[in-house]
Structures are given as structure tokens and as C-alpha cells.
Length: 92
Ligand SMILES: [Zn+2]
Image (cartoon, rainbow, N blue to C red; front, top):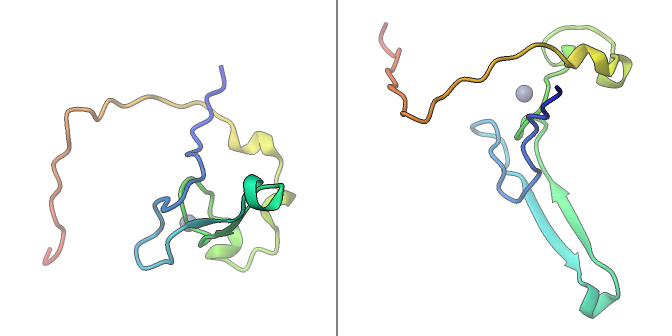
């Protein structure tokens, strides 16, 4: 079974702290323009994404150079519904 864990792309999708937020703004409507269209503005580290090797290394390959099968593998499900305990590591 393959389970797609990708978050839906939506306005104000979570992004990396300090990065510009994801924005989706409708610029044309069916009623006014006869079609719908939106403008998408987002950082590269928003929502569900994969950091390409170029992000932190001098690897010259782009994500499209990698086979999709590389991103499919075994997984597990963790139940975090009971809440979490967060401890700051500042000062350690
Ligand atoms: Zn990232």
C-alpha cells in the first residue's frame, strides 16, 4: 500500500520559521473573468517538501534527476494524539 503523506497546498501553509508564508491569492473569478486563476507565492521550505542535495552540498543534481522510486519506502505510523512534551535545549 502506498500512502501519500503530502499536505494539501493551501493559503498560509506552514513554512520554515522566518521564511515568507505561503500565499494563494485568487486574481480572476469565473463570474467576473469567465475563468478562475490564482497567484501562488511560497518559499521552497513550505509544507511537505524534500530538500534537494543542492540545498546543503555542491551536488549538481536537481530533484527531477532522481527517480521517483527513491522517495517511496517503508514507514510507520506514530500516534501523537495524546500530546507532546517539549523541552527547550537552550542553555544545555
Ligand atoms: Zn526544507
